[in-house]
Picture 1: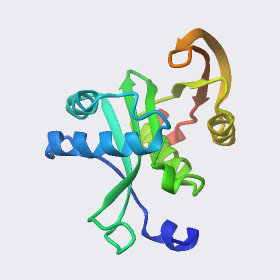
Picture 2: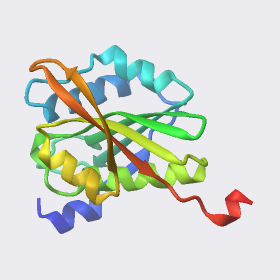
Picture 3: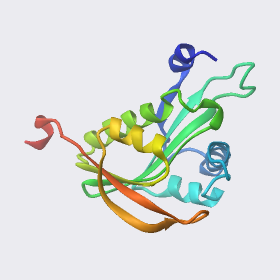
Picture 4: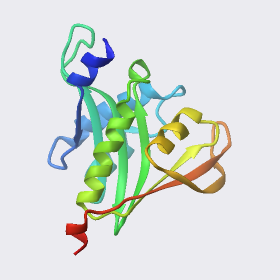
Length: 176
């Protein structure tokens, strides 16, 4: 599928808390399993609990049914975050291996950033493996800055995490 056509068909949306969370958790788990080399770092129940939590934000990227995809609205990317007070913490970002390098993660982040601004969030935090140069490049392109390191944060293999933060400027109307 060509990049232009994919971007035209790609649907980025926040998952509603009023849907069948068990079914959606299963789909999110399947997508995460396709996006990580060693399978999903989360179990299906982690996705379910994120969908159930009132302070969570789950954003998906999906494509409509085509002969290539073989099913209706295949989820090809997801982002899970938590909002507390004026901060957001990103827990998981993944794109199906087949659809990587097509700006899907970038578009999910744009959606999250817009949602955060609407909800008066002033900072977004995340951790990333020190070896994940592609993700670090994406986060820097979005404006994230390195603010710390967590030693031996990741397992399989054990690796440090870079802590990154994006400071958001709220619309002046909202601040008044």
